[in-house]
Length: 325
Image 1 (cartoon, rainbow, N blue to C red):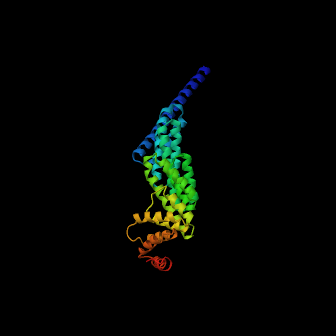
Image 2 (image 1 turned 30 degrees about the vertical axis):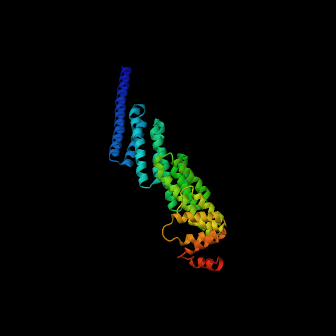
Image 3 (image 1 turned 90 degrees about the vertical axis):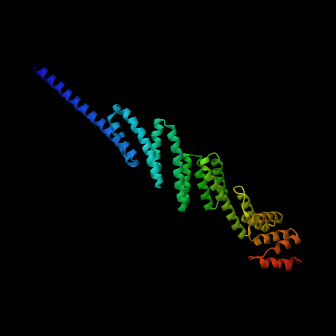
């Protein structure tokens, strides 16, 4: 009799434990579902940070439940992947670059786990863009080393990132290394040619490189370094065709390096492009023709110098040196 009583107690306890276990299991599944739905509502409201928190809680609960929650867990991970992405975009718009990248990295981990190749590609592009934006912001703050580190990180994510090559070109320009500036701008132009959405940066790369090279040429001219100035200006023509001012500076550079034939050619090109007063160009043309031995041509050029700081110098050449008629 005592044996039967003990057996009945064990059966009763087991039943109670089973019922408690089943109740707890149902309660846990309900909690997972509630958090999952909370995340869905936050997504609808575009409260992406709140959605991330809800889905993370739901996933943690699902993991504690075990295999019975696998189907719901899969749905949670899919939604969490998207929530991380959306939250990253929101943070990027607020210029919170590091926080944005952190969200994208979490999204990518889930995309890799779930085999979502399309999302992986999307995240590669946007992460590189955010890192490049961070680098451009650092350039504005004159943190050139920090900017270079950001662009390098962008290239680790996406080796063909056009914006990062453009940004590196700007950093090297600011550091005064025009060889490296050109190498990076050239890469931005090359890669950008295959991406229609990068047309803007291709144009920027060409413009920045050209202007920087011409500006450096004018510095070399003030140092009487004619040959160096000629090289910089001719390099600039790889990016833009040049305007009247560019050819005017090229004329001066050729004159300083005593390459009078090319100086005259550059001056005539500048004259054909220049609108308004051309006195400065005519003076340099006079210098070029005088240097090459064309006295008549030099006199004609000097006679057209009617304004600016070179008027007296032109008159001196005509009356005291060339004896122009």
